[in-house]
Length: 147
Image (tube, rainbow, N blue to C red; front, side, top):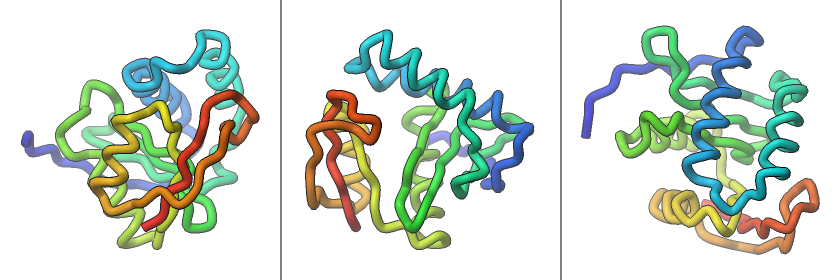
């Protein structure tokens, strides 16, 4: 595993362009089940989204954001790592911080995102329920997972 120096910092509005870019690269690399139309709709939604409504933390290396997560009420709402940094433990670092420092114990995962499902299972989460659609009512089943 490559040694990477990083800091986890609370979100600031000037980080938004970088986290949107991280989101896009991560989703293009992992969410091949999304239709192009759904991808564009979600991208537009996030451009307009006020990230200060959630507890957002960014993984920063040399002033560049390589990942971020968003939390609400002890639930991990988002965790995305820039695809350039997949496989070197950054997702684990963010999740460890979320669990150990922020008391996160729940996450919802797109069922079709088998990489993410495997990651969360490896980290100790178990499927406790399933929804046929995502939070916006799209036809992407969610697995509700808990530590």
